[in-house]
Amino acid sequence: MTTSTRPQAVPTQQLSNEHFIVTEWRFAPGAETGWHTHGHNYVVVPQTNGELLLETPEGLITAPLVAGQSYARTIGVRHNVINPTQHEVVFIEIEAR
Image (cartoon, rainbow, N blue to C red):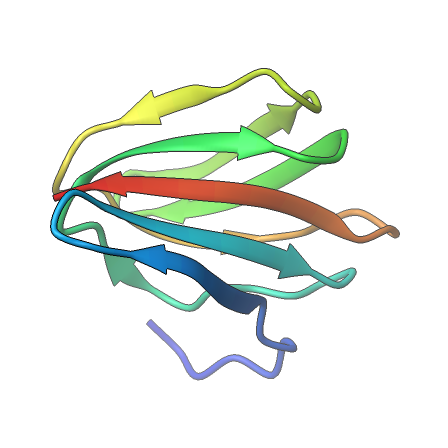
């Protein structure tokens, strides 16, 4: 993995307790999370339409987002999430502890 010059996505933690971590993620055009591995099962609730580009150990994956259409992933997912669009992309991530 190489060092990126992309802007960073902005996480804002909204809630953290013994059961859940809720984070709003805002991605400016071209922004990324950086490589990370999820330590919890989680649900993503898109707030905007758009798409994300996922860099994974298996290669690139394009993931469409539809506002209000949630999806879930399991613990251990490893990726870098990138906004390849020309507009801001926003989602809420809910991690179950």
